[in-house]
Length: 164
Ligand SMILES: [Zn+2]
Image (cartoon, rainbow, N blue to C red; front, top):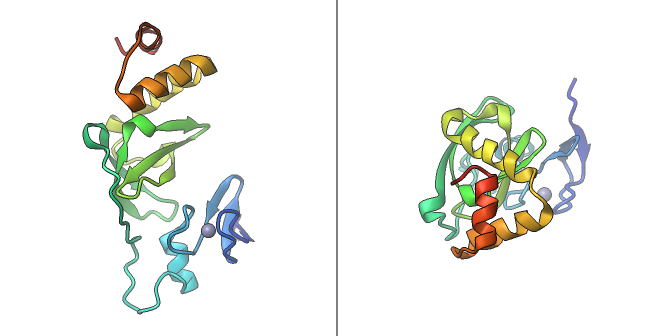
C-alpha cells in the first residue's frame, strides 16, 4: 500500500501527481515538482522513447563561489548528484531547499538522505541558527549575501550566527 495519494499537481495542474503531506511529485517534465521516476512510470516524461531517466536541465544559473556539491539518495533509493547554491539553502522542518544549477530552480531534499552529510550538515546547522534570527536580522542577512555588500548590522548578525 502506498501512502502517496493521487492528486492533480498543485503547481502545474498535471493529473497523476502524488502527494504525501507537504511533498508533491509531479510527472510533468519542467514542473518544479517534477519527479523523473514518476514521469517515466506514467509515460509522460518523453515522447521519443529515448528519454533519459534524469531530468534534462538547462539554464545559466551559476552559483560560482557558492557552489556546493550535493549527493543524494531519493525516496526510491536512486543516487544523484547536484550542484547547489549554498547561499540559497533554507531549512524547513526535516527538509532543506536549495536552488540548483543550472536552472536556478529551488528543490527540496530530505535531510536524512544526503550521501555527503559532511559537506551539507555544517550548512544545515548554519540554516538552523539563521532560523532563530528575527525576521529583520534574516532580511539583513539575505540582503547583504545577495548583494555581496556589508554593514555593521550585517556583521552583528554574522556574529550571532558564529560566522565570525
Ligand atoms: Zn506539476
